[in-house]
Amino acid sequence: MRLGGPVFSGGKEPETWIEELQQRGYRAAYCPVGAEADASRIAVYAKAALEADIVIAEVGAWSNPLSVDADTRQKALKHCKAQLALADRIGALCCVNISGSRGTQWDGPHADNLTEATFDLIVASVQEIIDAVRPDRTFYTLETMPWMYPDSVDSYLRLITAIDRPRFAVHLDPVNLISGPSLYFDNAGVTRECFAKLGPYIKSCHIKDITLSGQLMVHLDEVRPGAGSFDYRTLLTEAARLDPDLPLMLEHLPSEEEYTLAADFVRSIAAELGL
Image (cartoon, rainbow, N blue to C red; front, top):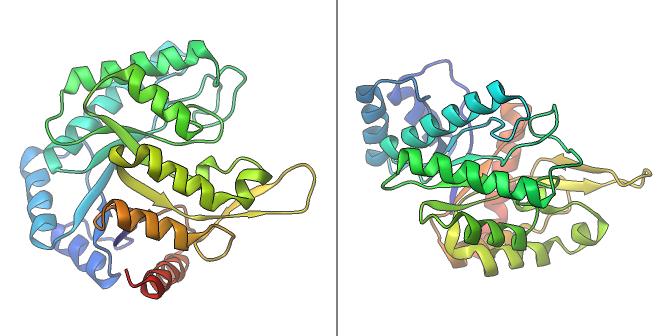
């Protein structure tokens, strides 16, 4: 299992970065530099990761390539291309973004997000990004989301077929697919479907947890791994069966202490399963 997460030290040098990753027992990492870094600095980080057996799991390209504002959309496309090129240079497994939103909140719900017209816009934007960069060793991916495509395993498969680019792949966040009570209570089934259908395309995976409250209407909240009801035995079993080196990346936690608790929980389940 390659568990990973963010680091918090003020130092930005490769030695400091590697030291903190190793102190936390992480074997996977988020990309430590941005696209503005020069080629020599990118090469130094890539070399440090390789020598320490750290996999750079992903480069974030967080932006809204579907914005209805033309200037915002063009800036987002430029950012995605730059980040994909960075991922290829530094040897990251993938570059990840969401597909985007037609609303004012870049990562939020909108009535037009889950329409065929928007599906077509996603296809065109991803093709443009990949065709502009033509990566040799990394992949452009879209994170699964509850209110925009890909919002299910089958919609991701549709995108893979429609985009039709070998360098398009899957960034999995199974918790983001839990959008209602039936999926919440059968989250193990959701996980198994993800790996059964998307397995060959999965490059990296975000891990977190989720709770369902009794408050009307439906309220689902993201929490740290171990503080909710997500079936980690199924997730870790499926991930190990697919690839023991698949990065499992912690995210969105408010403090170093929370990351430590989350990592300890994940490792305890892995040890229980003999992984």
